[in-house]
Image (cartoon, rainbow over all chains, first blue to last red; front, side):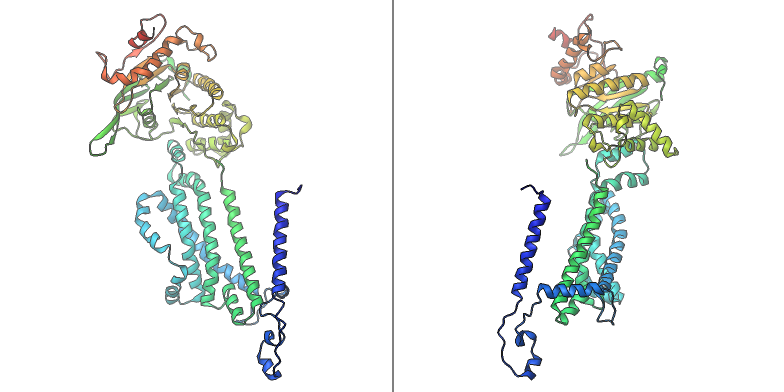
Length: 279
Length: 306
């Protein structure tokens, strides 16, 4: 084989994708067995009973649906019929808002915990108890106190993204090499300058790893949160299409959620690469 | 920077430029009480002098150096530099770390410039960089200004460490086994450079080493520490070799083997038995000053070897 590893991997990927599409296509061809029934009754039954079509949409149905969405992603025909682009924009906006508030809280607090062993010990029990709580468990409390479903989902995003960032920041700051701190001490560097020129760059890769974990979790949680509170967002869209029994749309949403999640992860990975230093 | 000619000014301040006065380090021992790593250590250094400390691991050499750097404070006694007691780290005393301790996210220039801008906080960026560059060129790394430490070899990293220490124009340099992680060839050429720079700049230097030949080549004065715990300064060896010695012909100098045997005897046996055989008239405040030489009467350790 003369082709490079990447090319071979690409060929295998395409092969797997092709086999998958073919299997999917064949599996959704329909049973063919059609019962004879009264036309009045047939109107009440689905296409599966009358024409033998599969209840599961095939790849061509989904492709047609995707094309439909791509043609007009931002249409708005009332509260229950908005384009998938609008729904995504709502979800991304909520994730970003909750996430950035979490950054603003977690980074300084993580610095404090990382620099002070006393604060680290003092705050440890709270973190240990709060961290394993499913973010959705906060939802009723948030709805009760905030009384706004959209802000409540932002709060849920905040609470789920804060922990990995907090813990990684504290860990990164606490494990800055002693010799680098000694360099700062022998150069009589002021505490503020030390924080920005030694501790922050030294801990940045660890901090960004935490931020990357957080954005992943936030994107997982927003779908569930929006299913719960409804109204707008990609999570609500999925649940709404399930209620409409539009399985094609559900499949399209799954794809789109995956794509957006990947893009968010890659953006953070890019930042992480920028601050990583080889030793 | 301290001008070289100050060395000849024979004032008291220059005789005792650095004075270590009765310092001790104790750790709490398990089950109460305390373990004494060393105590009652006294010696002094002249301005412009190169002083090496030799002793086995665990005798507290690095602790003495950290105390001179101000990174640690003694449990007893005091260290005085140029008339002032050391109370913390200072830009007057530059440390060259064993592990070079460069900041990996900064370039060579960035690392040295960081030190320069820490010392002269109001300097403009251009001035800082020009000053840093001068010292990077002094250690022969002018071509690697914009490389990161990960792109440099071990010897080059240590050179950057030396440039960083020199760039702040300190009153003294403290080196903790700076060359122990390097291969023999690199170590040799760096020793040459350090010796050249120290002679040129009249820098006072305190260095820890395990390498007897390194000490003989570089030092004016070699402090011998006995084994810890309870380490003490057994004696101070004055280097009898001429000041204009060079590394290649070092072993051909008449006094070379006398001083080398003296040091090795101490490391092999003397450092162990000294504590139990303290010579008559030994005063920890004034450790004996010896000058081994081919033409002089030998100390007991040398007599055995002869």
